[in-house]
Image (cartoon, rainbow, N blue to C red; front, top):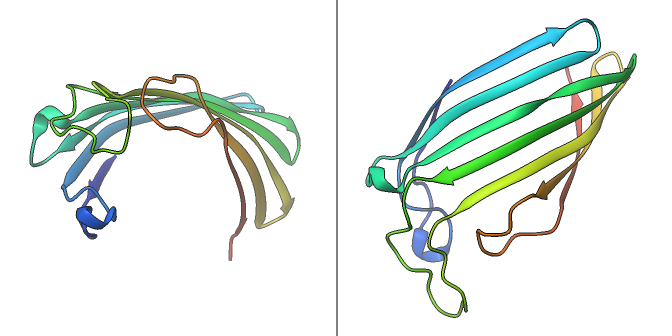
Length: 147
């Protein structure tokens, strides 16, 4: 896969980072039987203006089919910066981040409630606390309809 992030907002107004990022990566998936799908991916988040501020991203997990239309995904996600931030975090924050590493777990349920419809409930739970202000849990709910 290849992603591209372009600066579209004003970094001074907290509407983006103001940098261009290129995100190459490798994505792998394997279905085992009818009930388990394993996924893994790894890639780089390359900062086009300062390569030292790049990061490694990875994901590892899978989805287990509980019953015919209900599945439970669990994925572990990581982001590891290659070097310390070049710019200090501005005041009024009372802490200093020297390097940001984040590992999270994403757990949830997916329900195919109609032939072309999917309802998902998910929670992103941080497993590391070393990267500044982070919520204890980030819940999400989504409905998808294919037409």
